[in-house]
Length: 502
Image (cartoon, rainbow, N blue to C red):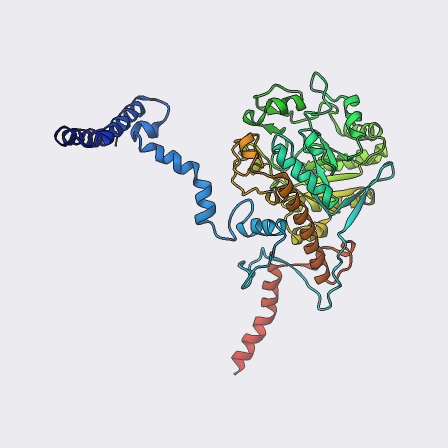
């Protein structure tokens, strides 16, 4: 192809030269051909890209199509029920509810309901009255001096750095209006999280915001921030679903001078949080650390977040709680399918337990150890609809957190560029020009409406099942597609026998 390219360009250049010589036209075209020829020569002698070396100039089209492949896939190829991690229908539901417009769908479901993996709610012939009051749950065990009344749905952990300052402010202002909490993520508590909304301060392995000069935990700095009135709860991050066993990642392109100052690190370098905590090194140390944070925060709710891996380790944590007679006020369960701004593919695809079995396991284990009534379970895993909330409660959760759902509410289009600093909607970027597109006042209203309308939908589903309270919800209100196959096995033989007799 390289030879054909040069033959074609040189032939065109010669022909154009002849035309220009005799007719004095085509100078601009001849200059353009000369530029293409020079680019082609440069492509053919470079050693870095085989495609450009073998296909001079034409190879650039390959890189162009590769760059816009996600957009082509999303806008021209995928169906409404396709798309990962979230389908077009799921994203549209969030957009509509965030904009507070009609979120109904016409003509019937687009899903194939006659499949074993289908799940649905067993509605009651006598539905209950829909409760217009949005549900709340109190978090705080026997040692908690400042219990917190939390909404059933809240904003999951997303750091400033991963998200832009405008995105963080919009989320917090929305949380203020809707009276629900906003988890800071491990990047630390910043001024952008302090817009009046309730905050859960997450403490990760990097101890950003409560970090000493050597990168370890600083109790004095922690106490200073933990006792701020807007900080309602403290969450120790042991691991997260998208990259369990791997520390947080902030790409160098997103690590601005401002963020580096907040975190106490060098700017314009990739920040890799340690995979493990330095403040403790075993189960005994973890429980002691919980007790320490409770004292430093003057009795605010303390909990930890994890993605389940080796189930025996969680059982050992439970045993250590009993041994020390010290219990976290909440445990946040993240699934392996959880979201992140940046993760190695092997960790995102192949490490950790998925959300559903993890939530069931944690709930059943706490019950088995006789400590379930002392600890609230918060779940974090693709919570974007009333149905997903009701399902999580049925599996054992007390409270739900959503990250990507609230990202959609402030404009995320699932462009899959969170780790490149080129997010086109200004949500997951530190590019000042791009983040200007995210208007805080408008997006905070959308955060509020998404939260309110989603919980109202959960209330409607609850009433449809004939239940008056989320305390009445269990897995028995759900049905699965394999039950339909069982029903078919029961009834079809009778029909066949009646046909045979005639």
